[in-house]
Image (cartoon, rainbow, N blue to C red; front, side, top):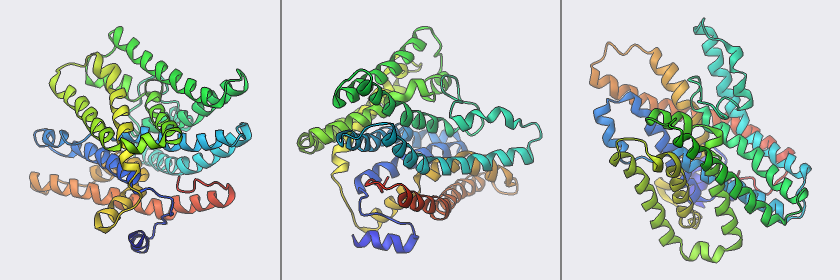
Length: 384
């Protein structure tokens, strides 16, 4: 654990002994895919298309990882025979103290910037961002585009435990059955909505696919449920989870490649991309979890920096596009530079500012709130 201590002393961000390095690898690669993808807006299309081959849907990976971690917490709560609204309240309080402060910090910064510099901006129609309803079943607005995935996460935190509680308390299902029925129902629901929208010809191009399928709550809740399946298998069939981790990992990579290739091979958005591509990526992520979750720790410079990126991944997601690209980089006059140099400068500054701002938010805003949370709402899952 020497490397963790060194990372702690160099960057000053607390690392608990419960952290799993393999899951940090997944988290860091997911956010790197997102930031590289958004960075494509700063690069000429001809150059970026070659980078595109090597990046995957980082947000979909985040969804499954989140479902796996939250599913693990819920399974521990369920097995304690103390599953009620009071326990759920504690679960929600810990989750919301982890996710909401950073989100609302960036949201308020963006709202204030719009109010100061955009006289046509109407702040009153942005109330839906405080309820995470801006993309519940409609296309996400242009303002703060990164927020689409946060809505899906927050509705998952709310609906999945409530469904399990409902089946258990009202219909008297056993806890395990309640969990499995909730998983199956949500997966079936989201896939059915995607299929229906494809069948009525709503999805005509990649933009429709992005706004009407990829970035809405009702069409993407199923992605997190595959993570919950992983948590269930990990808890109840741990020997299988680790025994076949290598073949599972290979299958997972092949599933990622299948979905990636489908978008390059087909010229139009078909039924696979519309209905099943999200499922394939989710299952692919699920299949790489056994191998990577077995990697408990690491050493060396790669370990240090991947752990660091993982620690600041949430703020990186929130600030890289709207704050850094739309507000900071666009405010700089790049016309004095050679076109090629301006691209390099913008892209370099994009990464520097994204990492720097994310580090400052993590160290001076997020970490104090998490320390307060861990003192006031006790839980064994402190690394979450």
